[in-house]
Length: 301
Image (cartoon, rainbow, N blue to C red; front, top):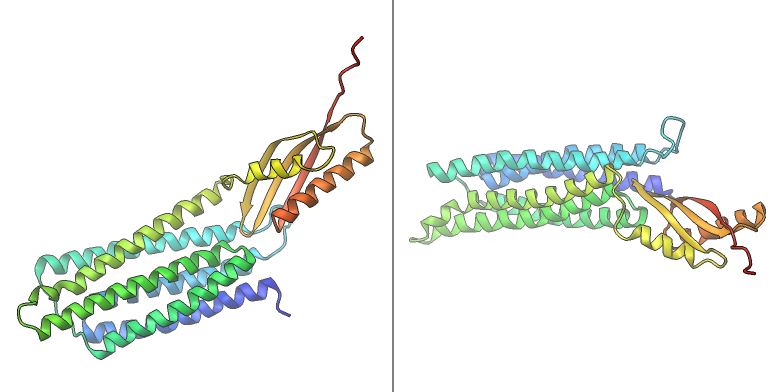
């Protein structure tokens, strides 16, 4: 039976191999056809390859256990990987937009919308559908942000490839039907559309990753922890809840209020019950519960 680490590394390695294949065929067909849309996709796939390699490294390192220098483990490596991927994508967009605007402004468009150009994009879509589904399945199963970022990235590649196909179709129509010459610019417009899609996804990915890196608490999770803790019998209250995520792991600190008359053993048993209750609702959580005594008011005279 494969361990979670082997499954995550296997998914990341498959993504690397797919990126190598797609980058190669897009470069060849893009150069031969002169399609900016396909060359933009080739550059995109080239950065996909770099991102996939970084993701493979990240999931390999993040699975290492905590040590003296990293008491919270190595999960943040996955967050850094996702941020690096977002930066790479934004850099790609700058080049795509520059080239597309230049072609639209100068009117220099020489694209061969051949069967090979269409074929490489159809293959790209098929490969991206397969690997995005595989990556998302592993990301959900193992709570891996690095794999989830890759899955989101490649699912967006599907739509950007569809846009390029539309651009190639416009060029084909312009060559075949008199009066539709304006469609000769469809390839450059398609490239701009690809860039806008990538900017949108990169922005969302980047903001989310930064929030993880600066330990922003997951929305409503602290309230959920408080509710679970207070549902345990003999727990009088819960406060000072702190939640942070590091890769696939969630770290939770909470203070619970217990009757001051309880023995140390009984108080410890109650904190164990609170931890078990939280862990049932939030899987793979590292939980620390601190008990605080509540002094009973003296009886009224």
